[in-house]
Image 1 (tube, one colour):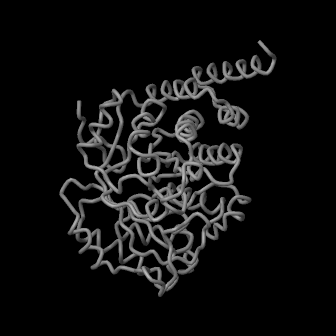
Image 2 (cartoon, one colour):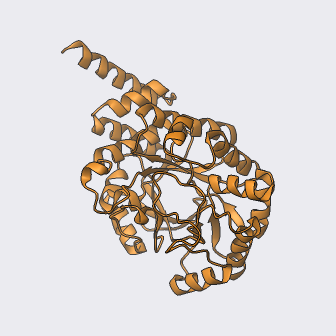
Image 3 (cartoon, helix red, strand yellow):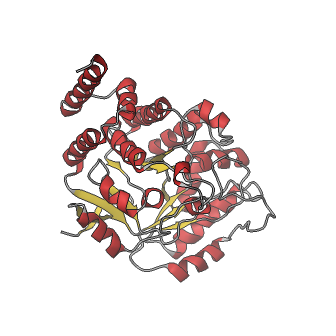
Length: 367
């Protein structure tokens, strides 16, 4: 055996031992795993960790994605959802218009509204508060999981209120959890290069820290597959892990596979299946203090989602009805999925489907 192969095997062996003994992986370990092509070992190890944490249960939720506005002051290089005020296709819905939209698509099983949108500076902060209030009054039984940390930072800027005050206003209107978006890659160098002209790394983390301090449990993401290095990705995971050590406020981590701007883009413009599965498995191994890793079928497709359930993922997302952000870029996946299809998908991976609420309380187990 040549020396390079031997040292690689030794490092993998050390990682396996660390994971089995419940020791934390380092930055070097994470980068090594990304550079290794031994997907099966990495996936198997992630599967072990997941089974230890969650058994064979895989969670999903009946939810709807809602977008009040696509007008946005930011010009992030990867976004195809945003519009300028007055541009063709730009819209900003009132609470009443959103209620009409929801009533057309709603059914009594829906437990969560997932609400995100553009950073629209042409309406006041009160608009965003009233949007939630209108939904909460009309559908009091549905949990409002709304806005990204970047949106909270934006609201703070347009209102002159602190993060805490912004969150308290939104909580009075019915906010129960924050979405995970706006993280992209938590690296200031990356954010500069990709023109992420919204919340920086410390602001993103500070919003979640503040939310956790107010008793909100939140979600968090990583958008991978553009210019970032493996090291950038692992540092991102470590940022999340350190905040979780401090607050224990994150419910789930969601790796988001970057979509090309054009649906006609060829496969070389997309992340490979190998990269997607490896990212899910490595996230499971690095984030030892977060209960769930989500396989987001909107970005990686339903079949890869099914495989991901054997490589560390314990959440298959939800029914979502009509997703727009990834689909305004080049996502080729369905915009939504039925509960029956999700159950079939999870059972097909030899797992137990569990319908959940926003906070991972079990609603129904499909044995």
